[in-house]
Image (cartoon, rainbow, N blue to C red):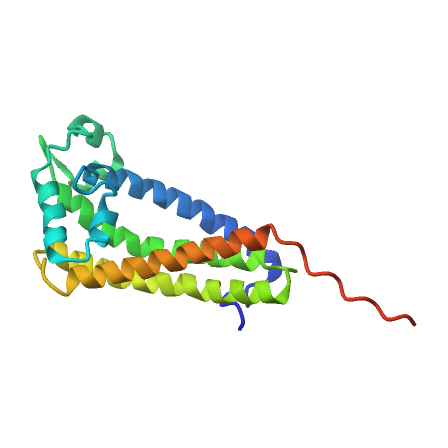
Length: 210
């Protein structure tokens, strides 16, 4: 099986990888800020807790905790210092939490191709000049990363449905399955990339005597 980004010229693979890696880290940092107000004892992992709720009762419990929260872990003064305040997330003394969530869900659609390209290019680079069996795993994982992004897109749609009041079957279940598949494929991709990076190069083929 050929890696999905095999067509990228060899001399451009590393520059493209670093561009998308930096963008991935930057956007992830933005998501960390967006997610901070939604971490509480009921949803310790913020939006990820909702992604993995799986059942309507659990999803309802998480959303209720966000609606009832006093946002003790972040102040309005702190929020007003964020660039996101210009989007209308801070209205006088009121924090509009679900505006934050909807912005994050929309912004995540930009993040999906960015992290997919970063990890897939990383797999391509890590597998260069490595044994064939390892390159094959890298190619599979490279496709898996893009499949993970597709599951991420479906998951975001179901989260949007949940957050607009449809806290009913099958939306939490679909979100949970999509999130599980997404995280599994991404973890597998990272694992293959790390193993490939630290594996020995394929021995050069012996030259036949003239």
